[in-house]
Image 1: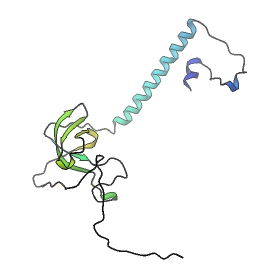
Image 2: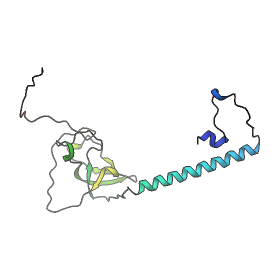
Image 3: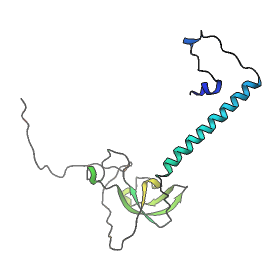
Image 4: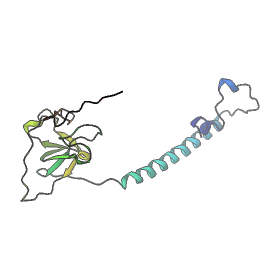
Length: 170
């Protein structure tokens, strides 16, 4: 029901239906008591709905906590449609790095040690954009020499034209 109907026990009367009669008016402490009871009921039901939705969301969450000195991957572009690192479609690299965690900023943000090529990007990221790097001694990391925009996207230019076709229409 609408909040007005929950508070006052009747539907809101718009100017179209003002000609209805037969309503009784409540005066004094009865109106205040009924209103506070309805407000309490509304708050209880809202709290129940919020806790139910929170339990659904908490099932999907994973607790991430990084220490200073850990290495993490950085999510390059969380938005769909932004071009990432040369490959299109399903073969896009989703994460770059690894980068070292310099410090924890707040409860869910971390400051990373970014290379000079990413100097224009702010170095504090939310934990949702990070993924833990599990070190492997045989893994050699070479950072690509690419120029990135501030939104972690970059421009693509063709290397060479492979084929050309002229289409004849009617």
